[in-house]
Image 1 (tube, helix red, strand yellow):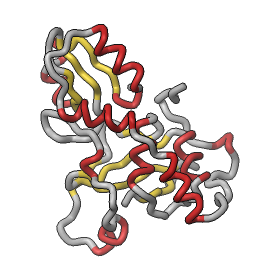
Image 2: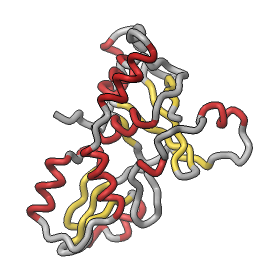
Image 3: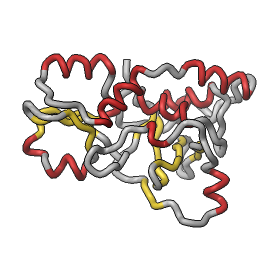
Image 4: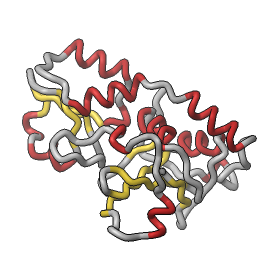
Length: 204
């Protein structure tokens, strides 16, 4: 299960979870942190993977160019931190070429396939790319418009998985967590003015 962690150097948080045999660090926007706070999730606590999926699809949780490490073969602490979760880690989209979940972009070549690619894989074909959009900036409306404007031979499995994620409904899962934890806990932050900034815009 994902676990919320507080940064040592500033009043902001990040999420660690295990996906496809790696521990992945997800950065959070201020809105993402507030959503977790309102659900009663505090630093050091685990929470349902479905909530992280919802933050991911809205752009409130995202990966950068790093933050990945191999899961040790034996680690009692990791077993405690990443206990079994009813929502599989394969629900997260991945690179169609190498299976990475880090820094994914939606890519298309002219009259070609629509894919999700990590920075390394899309760099190999950068001169051929006609469309190259960071996944956190995508919305269902934007994808639909792109498919209307561009000729696509085929959508990859991970593009289809991401479309399904954008269509998914998660509000009932958030509400169930809120009820289970009771009233929202006090803010994770001393002041809303000191929430760590991000370089990704929030979706409207």
